[in-house]
Image (cartoon, rainbow, N blue to C red):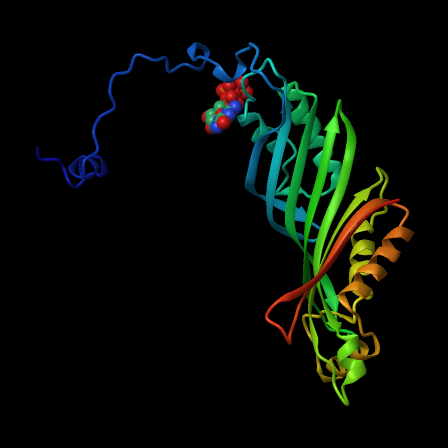
Length: 289
Ligand SMILES: Nc1nc2c(ncn2[C@@H]2O[C@H](COP(=O)(O)OP(=O)(O)OP(=O)(O)O)[C@@H](O)[C@H]2O)c(=O)[nH]1
């Protein structure tokens, strides 16, 4: 059969598209079976059911960036499934040129989600790149640094039952052993620090900054986007003056976190991408106050 190749429809049919069949199933929502809402004994309740790897715009500090979300609810034993479309509807209900990535907004999203799903609890993990201004140490030149953050929260009966933040940041560590045994120099490496901090309900405005400071200030040196020669000299000498094993860095961060009143417990991992090996060195600890 010849089709009118001057039209899209004609071209589609020319390439094999066919007309839809005349079906027997309803096309109106009210007449469609709501399978997920069917009730009987489905053997188990489910702790978490929802969506993950949702990419959605978020606002974090002065920046709009891409967030990655996992959102879920509980599901009772006598319910077949959740109404998944309501998860995105709950996010959209609090969206304003990006979803503000903070615990107040996430709590509102979870309460909306829990209410519309009529479930006992709801949980979110929301990750994004956290951009912030970073000034070079001597010349004070501004540029933008970054760390990875994940906000985690659970609500039950409209109350927050758990809230935590994970921050991953890069630092410099200079090897104390290398400094001790060598006539000159010492090898150093990129350290990757990951802190998950369980948090009290009330938080200071700068809680993320205080956590990041604990992670960076205890390293041999923090990282800067712009370094002029005077800055580079300062950073190099600071690292030499503050050598750190991976264990040292872990313990010094832990000591700072113990002192932060809004942190109730934490897990820290420090991983050094070794410059004299092909493997990494790491240390990890968990602590509950
Ligand atoms: N429960 C469940 N839903 C799924 C699954 N996979 C996909 N879905 C989605 O669920 C969508 C339907 O969403 P619902 O929220 O139940 O739709 P609805 O019943 O019209 O929505 P309401 O009017 O809010 O009740 C489908 O389009 C699917 O994309 C799954 O494994 N389980």
